[in-house]
Length: 609
Image (cartoon, helix red, strand yellow):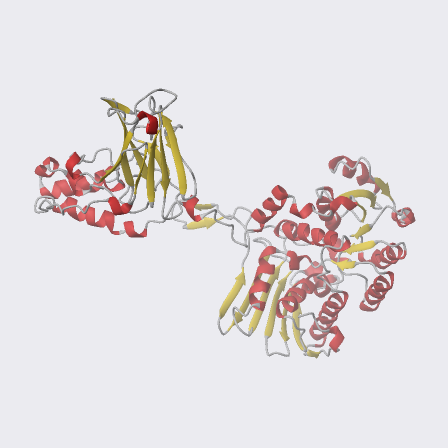
C-alpha cells in the first residue's frame, strides 16, 4: 500500500481523512492537506556531504552521524533502484555515489549540470529527518586553465555548489535566495549541518475547518519519536536460546557439530530391534557419525524387512546365540542394548570385556545387585555404560531444570509429575515389564530427583488395578506417590497406564517466587478450529512416548556419541540409575505394605550438584 516515497501520514491515511472530511464538511477537500504534513529540509542525520565535479561525472560522498541502513539515490531513480543512481548500503557511516553527467536524470542548463541526491533513512518512506541536496557543477565560467582546467577534455575549470532542499518530491522548492548553499571556486565542495540557515517559522493554517485532519496529523506523528533505526543498522537479530531446532540448523550450516569427526565413523551394533530398538535404529541410521555394522535379533522373519526399510545393505544380521561375532569384531566400538531385560547383563558383560562402549535401555539389569556389577565392570574396563533416561534430554525438561537451578522459583516447595501412558500396553508386554514402578515410575522419579538435585528420605505410595486383566497378572494401572525430600520439598507422582486422550506428560515446580510448568505438547501445536458454537478446539496431544520424546531419543544418542568421542562428560551416572531403582523399589514396598518407607543415603550415593 505505502511503498512510495511520500510520508506515511499522507499516503496511508485515506480512511481517517475521509472520516475527518465527513465531520468537517465537503470543504475539507479544498484545503491543502500536504501543507499540514510537509517534511521540509533537515540539518540532522548527516555529518558531511561532499560534491566532486569531474569532467564527465558527479561524485557525492556522504558521512552520517550514526550507523545508516537506509538508501541514497538521485531524485527520480528510487523506483528503478539501479546503480549508479541508487545505493542500498545496508550499514555503515561513509558512502559514495558516482554517476555520469549524462545519466540519473541530471539536468543541463547553460553549462550548469544539476541533480538532487536524497539521503533516506527508511527503505520505503521519506520521513522527517531525511535530507536532500541539490548538486551543481558549473562549467560556464572560465578559470585559470593552468591551475584547475580538466587537462584531458580541455573543459574550463569548474565551480561547485551544494544546496539543501526538501527530500519530498512534492515539497515546495525554496527560491534560490532562501536556500542554504555552499559554493566553491573549485571542483569540490563540502556541506555540513552548520551551513543550514535558520528557517522562519511559517504561520500554520487554521484548524477550524481542518479539525479532523489536524487531529489525525497529531495522532499520526505522535509515535514518530519511537521509530527505530533500520534493522540493518541495528544488526542481525539472534535466535532465542529456546529455539533448539534453529540452533541445530545453524550447526548443520556451519558444520560445527562435525568438528573432530576425522576419527571416522563409529561402527555400532544393535541388540534387539523391537519397540525401543526401532527408535534407536532410526537415530543410528540417520546419524552421519554412525555405521550400523550388526543387528542382533532372534526374530528372523523381520530381518529382510529391517534391512530393506533402513537400507542396511552392509549390515550383518545375527541371532543372539551368535553375539560373540559382535564381541570379537575389533572394528565395533559401541553397542546399543534394547533387548529384553533378562538378556541385558550377559550382553553388557560380553561387550565390556571385548572393549566396547554401551548404550543400554533401562533397566541395566533385572535387579540392583546385577546392575551394580555391570557398572563396576565398566569402571574396571574404562568404558562407558550409559543408561538411557531419555526425559533428561527433552528440550522442555532440560530448560525447566536449568531455570530451577538458577533459582527462578526460589527454594522448591512442591514438584508434581503427571505421567499417563498411551496407548494401553499389551498384557504380553506387561508380564515382562517388571511392574509399573520399575517400568514407568522410574522415569518420573528420575526427572524429579534430577531437577531437584537430591533424593527423598521417605516415600509413600498407593496403587490400584482398575483393569481386570492387569490385576490378574499382579500389576497395577494407577499409582499415586508422595516423596519427602531432606530440604523440605514435597514431590507428587500421578501415574496411569491408560490415558484415552493421548500421552499425558506434565511437570510442575512451585516455589515462593512463582511456578514453572512443562505442559503437554501437540504434533499440530498451532492448529485450532472454531466450528459452530463448540468454542475453540485444539488438536490432540502426542499419542505415545515414541512421538512425544522423539527429540529426546535423538539427543541422548548424540550425547552418547559425544561421550565416546571425548567431546562431553557422561550426564547419567551409574550411581544415579541405581538410586532411582532403589527409590522405585521403596515405592513398590510402600504400596504393598500400605505405609511409608524410609530411605538412607551414603555421601557417595548423592546426586551431582
